[in-house]
Length: 147
Image (cartoon, rainbow, N blue to C red):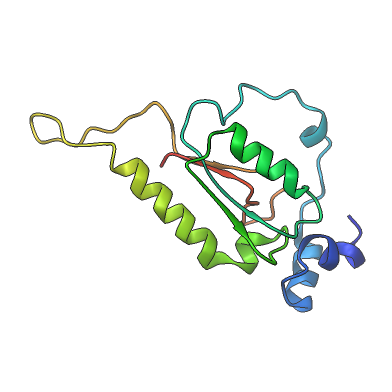
């Protein structure tokens, strides 16, 4: 991605100064992201929540909707007017979805008979994302897979 195109392509809803900084600090796309074989789909078993931008110039909206439906997402939130840089441009909206996901997952764990906390270890908590991420950030069309 050429730096002069970064603002319009990835971060149209961020101030130009922030987009310029992101453009120069972004890691280059690694060809492994496009060519490596994928393992087992992360969306098949763990519960999923989807939050994604309406105006992403990189991943088409119908593709995002398809992925959310295919994963059986418990919640799907499309952020109107948001770009690919969703966590940076709409951090509160992303945080709200994450918090609801954490509460939903945490509520299924309960105390054991002896009063200790029982935690389902089947799904290790993690964010998974698409594309290259920038240092200290993550890309969201992502799934919250348990916590």
